[in-house]
Image (cartoon, rainbow, N blue to C red; front, side, top):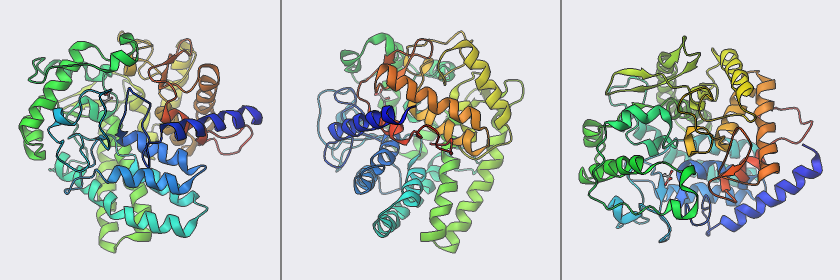
Length: 431
Ligand code: DGY
């Protein structure tokens, strides 16, 4: 990308973050998502930090204002009421919390963002003070993951709702989700399809099952033990597990500065366990990592972009095979990286996580492939993102075939990823 293009794009990206700022937290986009979302915030904090470090730290502190006493970090923090979104705080039965939150979580990118911001900070003393205050919250969050979602210390955490994966309607969840009944006690009032075309969003049947799970968990009082025991949807999501492993590695770096010897040993033990366990999700036949369905007790043979995320976790054993896989996908679609293999019968290039290119994935995969030494692949992913934004705008996601912008407009994590993109000629292919 030419430098003047990059400068103009950066200015527009900063403007989007400012417009989506609601006073210390950033909505992903106006109306469609009017609250603070967990993994969006981690990316957005890094985007802010590119031009306003204090505001970047604030983003993370505001998200952690919603952290529960047991360390759990919810997927939505409802700082201020809005009629634009369903399901709101009353459906979660958590409207009395201050602030109100949802009762499920999302991929834990937070420790990675904190390390990233600390290491690149220009205001070093302030960054150190704020990271030191955040650090115990991250420790509590990672302990929660293991206690609540891997109580037998298998090294792999369980996900109980497709929304927790961030990849709500991924074809990887089709079979597991089909076991969840469609009946709901909460009437479904979809607001999303008033804001964007229904063809770009999950289907009605999926929403019924999503809300069935919310009703069930609310009835269980959001008890982690009961949810784990009774959920009809239980998967080991390769995306969440890879992101958590990366976050543990970043937490260890923070622990060397802010933590105790015992904490470092605890984190190192988790990294050893998780690193060994994630290898069990590699499919030699598939040439990619798979998620697993714990109720069917089987790997889920659906090739998704999440199946490449172990490179983001610094697991490089299969990096060359995964890069080759991406090159094969690039023969079938114009833009990388589609959210599922384009030759899959489930591929729908415009429907949310069933085909489109997502900025968060391009950021994580470019970072991982770059660190793995797969420089050309990393560069391809970074360039695709820049070109898509330049051609179509700051959309939530993009059609991998024709590059059309899809979903929400003026999207915060797309703006953040744009700010993280390298300038032309910059040496490091990683963002
Ligand atoms: C939504 O509402 O679409 C979100 O993905 C749930 O977190």
